[in-house]
Length: 115
Image (cartoon, rainbow, N blue to C red; front, top):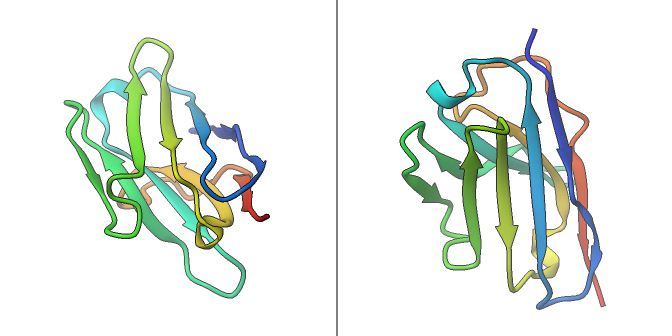
C-alpha cells in the first residue's frame, strides 16, 4: 500500500515562503503524475499544482506565479515551493496523484499564513 508523508508546513507571515515535501513509498513513483492539494476548514480539497511523470507542471490560477512544484524521482519526493504567501493560502496541504488515485491520504502538513 502506498504511503504518503507530507512535511514542511508551519506558521509564516504574509509574503514569506515555505517549501513542502511529500515522500512517496513505492518503486513506481517516477511513472506517475503527482499533485499537491489543500483543504481549508469548511472547504473541499482542491488541487493547486500537479506535475507529470515527465516533469511538466500546471497550477491553479490562485497560486500561479507564486508556487512551484518539482519532483525528485531518485528520492521519490515531490516538493511545493510556496512564495509570496497570502492568508488565503492557509490550509492543510496533501499530496496524491492529480486524480486522487490513492485512498490512504497522508496526514497532511498545516500551513498558516498570518500576521
